[in-house]
Length: 344
Image (cartoon, rainbow, N blue to C red; front, side):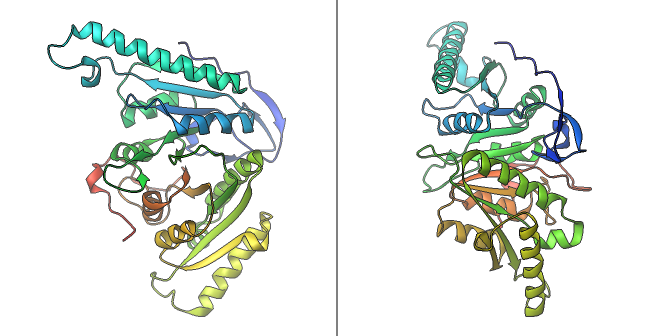
């Protein structure tokens, strides 16, 4: 199936908008007052092993309809991989591969038709490539995606879902932000939590925190959801036991949240270890979506922040990881077992 050409750019006056440069690795980007823009482009990635029931695709369709933007579906099918060859000696490999392709095409056609009946502008495509992190990233760049949506995977023998080793690798190389959908009943956000880092704000400025809040705001607004903001006072950091420093940091958080129009009752400033404190707060609250920066001032070799990595392991809800620029961050692919976990 051919990829639909991008619509012609148009000039729109607004102070905060999504630009035509997905290579900036940001879901949203501060732009000049008059900029050339196109509609936000969502991309759902369906790996070869994608099950018939797909909460992430349902979620992506509902989100695209709420935002009023097109949804691209990339169904990966590796016709030369082991999964397409069939058991040894069963049939001619070419016959098996063609059968696999036909089933994949039928799945994509049926799912696309179902979404179109709900009013979603769907652009489906079979991608004949392996379901690898590098192929996912290449597909996102080719389609000029602004936001990627993908299912979280169930883990054998574990009660909770999380990111697979492939997901970790993909998040480190993805050119844009990634929304990982928690399995279960499909539900677009009704309550959104944006997590910001006031320590990073104090050291590096506020552009990353602005990007996180504005991305969360746009999604919350489109879905009619309540927007809350959380920041953690890291009690494990050197010198953070000083109560006067806590008060100063809390005041900065309140000022920042107030600038973004966040009501006082929707602001949450909590002491503790960042990843553990956020996960504990999520467990006792009813949030549908957490929005975080994928990188912060404590970077793993993969370019993923320690706090973000710990949260993604135990969030318990869908998570949007915003890819924010990181100065001099060593972005590279690492083996899955080399990733350290922030939560205990």
